[in-house]
Length: 91
Image 1 (cartoon, rainbow, N blue to C red):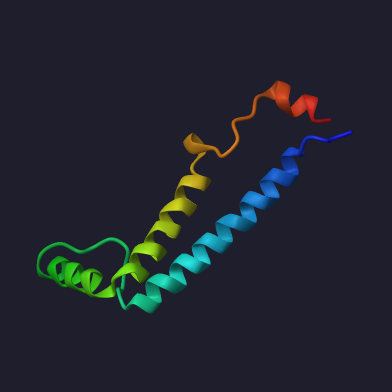
Image 2 (cartoon, rainbow, N blue to C red):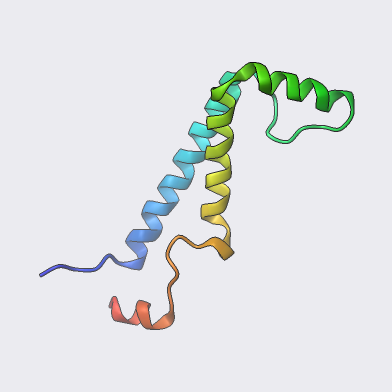
């Protein structure tokens, strides 16, 4: 007999993945040499663009992991839409 996953188990896995994405993304972005994810305006913004261009795929991968972490934790983009009926059925 197969059991469906519990909401608490899904939440625990998502919480662990969020931390992993954040840490790995921060490490990759830091290793790329780019100081921030969001550029400043003016001359500093032009310097940021040059830094990102020089960093190649390392910054790109780290930035997307940070973005993925943000999407997973935003309430409007829930990984698994649950209703009250689904929660009651899992008990």
